[in-house]
Image (cartoon, rainbow, N blue to C red; front, side):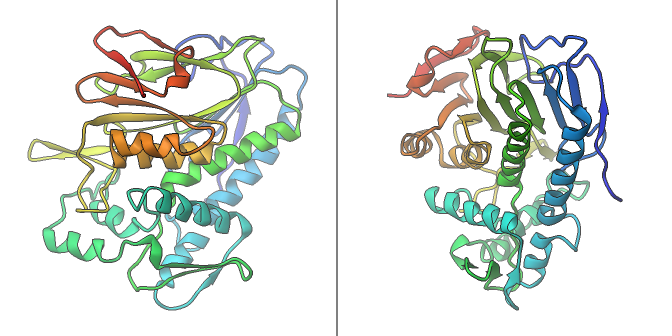
Length: 347
């Protein structure tokens, strides 16, 4: 079924916005409503006056639909699905967009030493977290799936724009990076139309474009131990992307134990460490998307080592013992709102 974005004017507050951004009558909202990109609702709020909202909406609609058709693994006709179907058989020609997303996925797989791995598809499919088929796999099933995970087994031909998975049964899963890429593409479209102030929300991937009436945007950081809309702190800044990965986002319970969706490429089980949630701040949403998963999987020390090695990236790490560990550069941007938590700054 072809997805259509629709335009409407509505007084709306994003679920993760804690303060500010009260809409004026002239402000417009572009939204997918009940439709999805990679299982995520898209909402865009433009604060500028006098913009051709209908034209912007039409262009974003076409762009998002095109990227959905290329990157989703939910349909057999997508480029990512064709790559997976031809694993161990033949290279597959892909679009520039798909090649870029996969190339960046490999890049962050290398940087994280495989803690983030774009070939995690066999594991993700096995667990089925987020679907009605979610279950705890057997040890034999995990062993088999893990043998098929390995970013080093992806062959990219930049000149021919082909992607080849060298073993049958391998599968790409671009879910941990594609939403960031699409968010960046939407932001580029807004720039094309000279939109100075807007909020993009793609399933929790946030891009705050410009500022809010001359002041920083204020975004709430979700308390991972409470209901949505309960914020442990506020981050204030201009022109930035924010992406969060946490144990509370997608999970299921079996025999009294909770299993979340961030899977370890070491043992195949959901990652178990001291982290409850990671939020990454960056100018680049694709970077923030990949790093939120990478830092979560790496843990505090190795995760911050990765953050510190990269330009234009900061982290907010929430631990299971209710500490909030921040990059030092965020000292003036973050305000604690919940006294159950304590703040530490990364040395």
